[in-house]
Length: 168
Length: 295
Image (cartoon, rainbow over all chains, first blue to last red):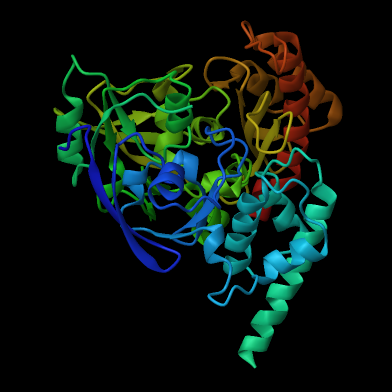
């Protein structure tokens, strides 16, 4: 049994082991943004509806506002900062969003990218139905859904092509 | 939108968790997947003094088949249920219901036990448990007991679990070969809570008439409910649009105090329950095979 004070957590974020002292009520989103300085993860509704805080936890798209930082102890987390290569190269999903105008104000974009990243990592063959299902959990108030969908389909094709290239 | 401060415990065993619940003077909440609890805490509708996190207890997640039922550890995620080939094959009604819960981003953490113990009136899993005669296995300071789904869901957000009892396992009987099924719901937006829904199972006799049919409505009253009056109208009769409409009317009339909120009035929810019953019956009959077809 542990009290309400600080809890030591240790997790891998974008391939790097990080540690922090957190209050029990701190969410994973707060840990990432405030303690670890990874402000690419945005926060919107803070009750699991809007999806902008979505990150990948142990391979699955997860609302970082609906997971306590203490629950993330021992997990492997990927945030939008982890999508970009070490040399600064954009991920194919990011390239597709730039090419197909998948963002306007950009506030919702990190969550959308991470939700799609989890989907395409698990199922590179994901089609429009699967993509729509995932996008259903991500709100965009610029209402650019058609261009987001187009970007996502383009990203899926690029990820598939990259996977095929890798197998060769 | 931040939860109020609380103490946190991550017990390593069910026994330890139960011991932590056994303090009547302390407001204690069990954290499973957190996809309903954390929003409630963020909005301060829930302000527990102690949160008991089940996430560090080994062997509390997993899917197996035992004595004609699929058995789910309470911490099994909905994502795991959705991906389970065993569920898809042996309990397609549960698989279909799972796909309607929130979004993949929610199903990745939301759990089977969490849904049952939270008992939201619009939740899908309680309806599945009720229509399939499922059961809940609870552990408390006085030992374990099994609670049939029919006795488990008492009212909105209220179950038969005692304050110091922990839900550890959920049993959902496999769907017998030849049984038709349907799971229908209507929500304002994809992934939202249903305004109304139905879960049905259908068995037909060799003549193609209803021999056994079970109708559950949810999202309309304070807890999912079987509508036996509608089942009686159907039993022994030949399926068809007129009969299904009559059953839908019976469902509508059977709903006494429908929920009403900003999303849907009580009358609209009753209307939906009737329409969804009709649609569900058509789907269920289409999926059922007559008894003689089954080897």
